[in-house]
Length: 463
Ligand SMILES: [Zn+2]
Image (cartoon, rainbow, N blue to C red; front, side, top):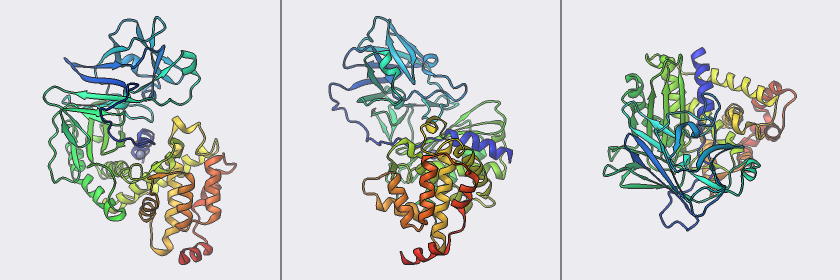
């Protein structure tokens, strides 16, 4: 069980939701106020050239989450500023470019070796394979203007700004959103792979695997990923995203146990595997690896086909993806049981609820309660469908078909849960768990997951 717990500790905190606002690939008819960033190889390294529409005292990076290893900001170490008079400084919650003479020049050049680091609750800035194949995340470069350090310091959320990241890679081009392209134009939501990626035309799911991955794991990824997608498609219907590309990197290290990180973006799943326990396969690690694929794959439905309205509602997508992955893995991998994960979620959710409600701002960086408590909310919904033979996949299918705008907020979700047969007192209980700390969290969780009462069955038979 220790391996599983270790896995979960890494995994649940590392997985990322898809962005709350999904913006299509940007075109190049950008307005004059657009910040343009050109990213290209430069010898053994990479270069990014920022072209700002005007000179400002500060430019702050939208995505400024710290790295997992030590909780520190990563840009000042990973990027070297080539342009004189500009430095990378931490200002409040943001990494920034600051001009030494009170203004950042309109053109700033940096160079970097793509940092294969893991961030806390954020897309990693790069994935680097053991053979050097590199994927770079456009969101690492997007910035917004600041009038002063003080103004940025006072912000707790980033501000809007139009950014256009252009990835070029000589004649080889880049692979971006399902296709090999001469150049890719990104708005800060995608990874560009600086390599030629050959995808079979008829493949429902494409995989790009690090040659350093242990053989059993690479074979499992190749075989299981299409099975997982097919299972979800049969149960829920088609997803709304591009053809999935699974990008799995291997990080050579002496880390004992298992370290996993992953993210889902439009048309892409990234996975990062690390740890000596992965060198040899055994049924438990195989089951957990499949669960991990299934969690990220679930985001193509719960996260992209429908998405949350605000990061505080990550419990909808992360908790839901956790339960989808548990049930899919139980069906697809003999001997796998979700029970230990559910027990751990109960304990972790109870500990969080003793401190604050699930939508409390304090969880915006800790994020774990979104997974733990969110999966328990999903379990309660699942149980409400049981008397008539429906399960959580039926709920997700209904959620998708009832959301014309593709955005699920708290009231949408609670209304869908009520329609699915979740009793009003349990809806009220979830509402309370979302908004405030609980005096007796273990009892609240027991109440939430108690067998549906007869009134539920009556309601269910009438729907
Ligand atoms: Zn996730």
